[in-house]
Length: 372
Image 1 (tube, rainbow, N blue to C red):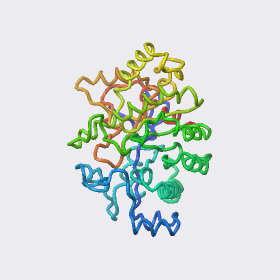
Image 2: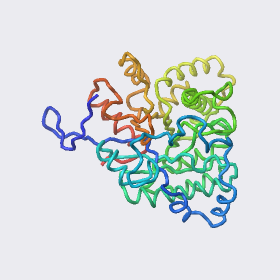
Image 3: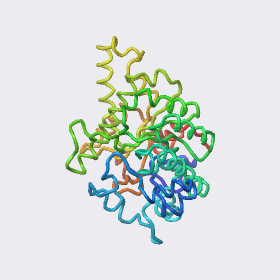
Image 4: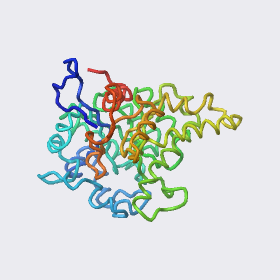
């Protein structure tokens, strides 16, 4: 695949073409948590962290349970030359990623910070601090970057207040959750979050990851990193099923969902199966007024990374044809090791419309951004 990166590129007729891309999954991290995030935390929470830590549902989350933990699941070349971890240096991110790939819009999703801490009050405080950190360290300094509102979704009321605190700010383009929640995501305990996001005109971006307190597969804890990685798409299939059958899309007008970092090719088969189940069991699924595929088609977008790589490349095109070329968003997953380079991510010939949709226009549509 050949994507133009020259801002003065022209089509065959000599007209200038849009060349900037939207990257819908970039992971920033604090270079120094105490120096950068503590200023947004009350002193009592600073002391609490120093004394008791940030305990999560899975005790070994902070350890190296899988090889991805060494080091930080990141590319070896993504460590800033001036020190700090991958994704912690804005100048280096510009140099290594934003500028060479002509990123016009970069959607940041901080991970492993606050959302699944057992002490819910601490989780609320950390999420709030991280949202302020995104503004102070990133969006206020780089207009191409937009943040994700982190929410402690264990407490829907607190999550709603955090969404309302940032609603209307240009710094944020979505509300962030993780796919492995304590309860299925269609559960009505989460509905106030979805309603607040819809009221703010923001989609909910669900990033594949997290630990809700149960094994990451339907049959227990995996032995290998690759098993854990494959379970990302399983968790997203489960949450879509739950949200459709619990009636989230029917009951909350304007609600939009972006699935992040779970691949894409599984969605058509899931939609077909849900339609078949719904037709046979409509008496139980009283909140579902239309075929599940209708809700999926109207309300859900997916980011591409980690994109499937079939031996027959046309099969990937077929999958996107079934999903819709207006529903898949390019994502790099920078700075992680399985980064999808925009020059290589779609090694097939695309039409101008397909390319523009995939690399740019779909993101502006999903996030409700004006074009220009």
